[in-house]
Length: 340
Image 1 (cartoon, rainbow, N blue to C red):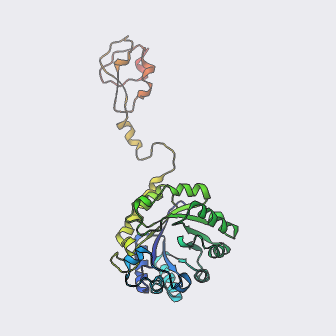
Image 2: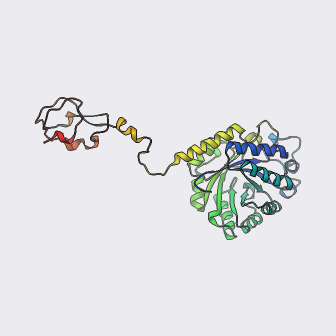
């Protein structure tokens, strides 16, 4: 996590429980230029009770005749073998594998896999046993903050730091947990608020439609961007409709890299590319009329015209009252040798 924005392509559960689809998602993320492709690791029985119902967006994107969140998630689990196969496949494709643990068993499994980063999902920010377990591993931690208050973020980060996690290894992601997120609920200014209050790196996990918001987040200082993607929004499943399609993911990555290049060093000085235009676009002091030897310059004798390779118009007052030592013509450029 350096000055380059870490782009996490969130495959999530958009594989629909199919390892073949999961590998295609890895292909898409790698071809788009993302740094990381992220999945979700959970045991449905450890995550939700039998009585848990689907969220509204899950109902509208899945079978409305079955309101069971448990049954939906059971169909979306990746078994242990699939994780190892996907990790190996990511290595082949040159992209980092990451997965989010939603329960303690899944966290332990991912740590045994050798993951060097733990991504805590928004729904677990108040799960003290999970936070304490995460902290004990002394890994890099990425913490999503959808649905949370600033006070909850501060408290969760404190739990991590009071454990074995170093502050410099924590990145908090501003997030809104609605799929898709209405633009008026994004609140990108919270990135700065979180950074000031918590004193850690801050990124952004996006659930809006389109790519404008994550691109804007980079310009506000987000060090990580996470964005859901899918092979097609027409696929059945809870998250597909709020995800980018492959060409959109590629465009987002390209735009973020352009924004990075455009952020610059912060000093306001002429850039190398524009210096050649200074003489053409700026102005110098010129004479506005023919003037005789011995003429005493008045302000209306002078005009400011291009090119800008002469004396700056900012200095024109210093020449008022000076006496010419020669004749000059209209449009001649003024220079210091013209005066007594």
